[in-house]
Image (cartoon, rainbow, N blue to C red; front, side, top):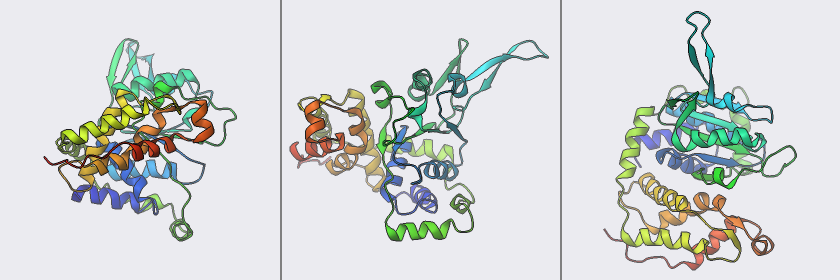
Length: 313
């Protein structure tokens, strides 16, 4: 593994206990310039994960607690008249940062969720006809509770599709929870990160290296076959979009880079498919009754699509 990636992994791991696969997915999303939806019950470390990532990279970090009374301008910023110069001045909103934690995103109104679309897709903010570029790297880490639905709004498919990955923290094991108790006994585990492991400019350079990872023709066709299969199943009302194909392609390259290879394998595709594709699917009534979860559909697809044997360069 790249030494900088190892330092970043260790830094986040000094705060988050035992979630190596989750940390790996978040770093892969960062290296691909994608956004992460963290879907899990309260109290399992979603906010800590976002804060640990921002501290480890040394970028600016903003958190906005999304509730029905939050306005789009709270995210995008607004223009106001300077009382001394009588000119309009832009006052940045929460999105003007490297890492934006949108906590409980499904509690925001549809109008606020729409304001996030341009921010997430274009990495820019338009206010009063003026476009403001966001700093790079820019990443949205949104959280939502999949159990409680009272007072929440459904995330539209267009917004779900803009999330590079959807991941879950999951409950810790008994040994992991014992480590958590020990770490939190005297101070916040975030204090373990005394200085950044890497810097924003390092992430931009690592992204260029990920872009150079070689993906052979058979592996590319395998990605397309997996995505195409989701569009044929009667257990799905909506399959993965071409944006899903692009995301899976990038994720496979990032996974290969994290493994220390300069070429991608079918295993890279398989290991990332569930996190990258499952949230882009909509189950049909038959799928809801038979499978109940879109993750199960992806596992079914991976079991049915033949894995290419010839992946040489």
